[in-house]
Length: 78
Image 1 (cartoon, rainbow, N blue to C red):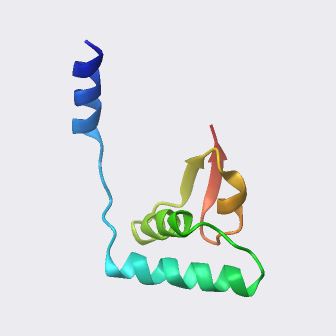
Image 2 (image 1 turned 135 degrees about the vertical axis):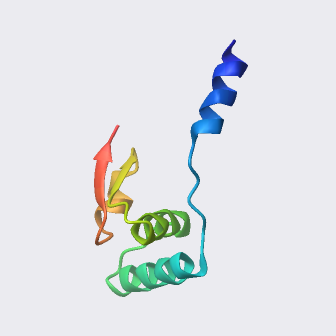
Image 3 (image 1 turned 120 degrees about the horizontal axis):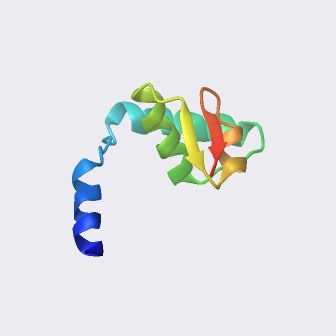
């Protein structure tokens, strides 16, 4: 039963692609943060940039500190 529920969940998920636009935006985010002396994981920059490109402005995460420093992204803890 759990496997069936999991398969249904996966079928209903929407995946947002990593595009060249979001990759370039992630690089810009990373560079701007490093210039301010802030080091954020590359993957967090990619997650944020994919969201921004797709007009998603809220990230729900337990990793609040990395996303709080990224402009155009609001953070909610779970």
